[in-house]
Length: 186
Image (cartoon, rainbow, N blue to C red; front, side):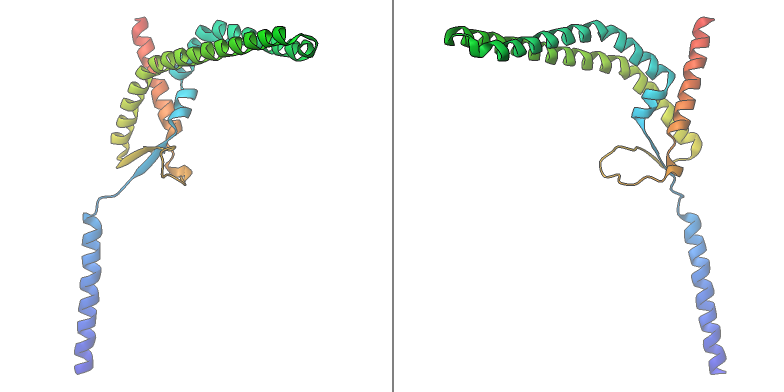
């Protein structure tokens, strides 16, 4: 009788534990996490490609000008290296000063151009990123996600491809851009 009572006690205890675990599991909210590659979204989306094409067109002449100046400086340096040993000390020193000044001027122009390009890119991308944020929020709400992270955030070392929703975001954003374009045409 004592053995039977102890078996019943153990059985009741185990049954209580199992039921308690089931109740606790039902009360715990399900965590659903996703990641996106925003750079890929911008690079592959219709609006992102249009923006990058416009920026490239805008700055192509500036890039060409910088390439031409870089070629001139390179030719100047080669000429200085070739003819420098044949020049007198004063003439060589003057040519070296000219070369260094041209190099500094080129570096300043290049830095200014890069700054201008970054500013233009930020200005062009800001509305796209704001629209993408809305799309990601909508996907998060509709998909029941607890958290959506950008895949290149510090501290993320591994991402299972099953949680990557980048292509879904691109598709949703492209559909939104297309429908907005169609509305604007009407």
